[in-house]
Length: 141
Image (cartoon, rainbow, N blue to C red; front, side):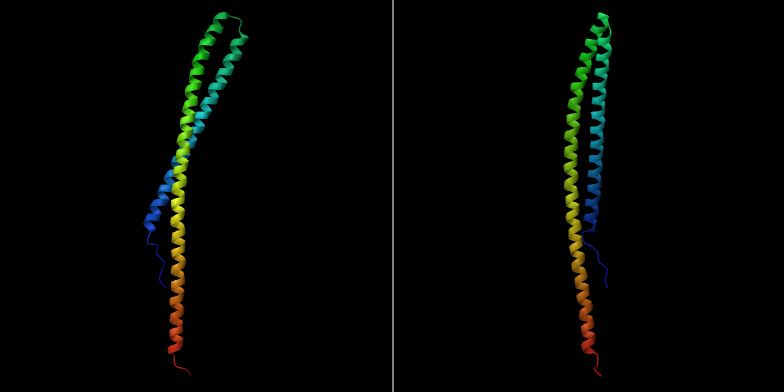
């Protein structure tokens, strides 16, 4: 009995590699989003701690410095919010690319499965024809 060989095996392997690469890009983008969101939370906590400390002080010069420092933190917060939004867009794009690569790979896997089934059926039919031929050509006693 002959062995099944998928004629698009190399294409299938390339698609698998592309899917794996797209998945890795998505994972990297997702990790970047998490890191950027973590830094945004750190900035928000920093702002709260500066507010808490500043309002507990009675010295006006400290409060003036606090307001200037809070302005810089607010600017950083706005910039970081834009960075987070950009990272999220990159993640969405990477995920859609991974999904497309995964679908293409699944299509080839289904095609391979169908071809293997057809091959198996053909091989079984050949074997059955050979058995029938041997049965019909053997002398009857």
